[in-house]
Length: 173
Image (cartoon, rainbow, N blue to C red; front, top):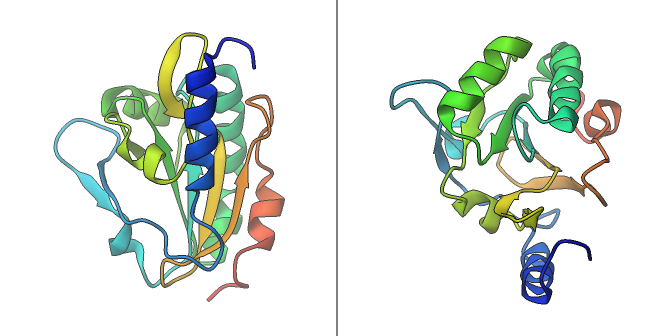
């Protein structure tokens, strides 16, 4: 595995085993939203509707820009199903705000700057000398916060397909 020490590879494999499985409750979290101030998103506050957790490595990176543009374009289909998308990365709330404004992102982006959530969800990776950022991953939660489906990129070059994610949501309200 290029650019990773054996210890980093072992840690990633161990964390991958911790990914919440379908049928298990999604780990709750509270994270700062994109922007300035102390506006926070609590996952438990979204209960009562399906949620798509969209983990991505870095705002403004080419793959993540493609991913966010695609999910922004398809957001009306998710909203029609009563679902909320929540983007999660280790970027600062300030960087996420700039990114949301540049791409017109209609759903909340939250900052896991302290990297606790990416570890709890088993999606923390290290590459290129950068320690602990989010792998590209998706978790579909039902209205009770139970994981119904998960996807993780086999490599950072892969992007989740909105149509595939939509197939795992309930039909809608």
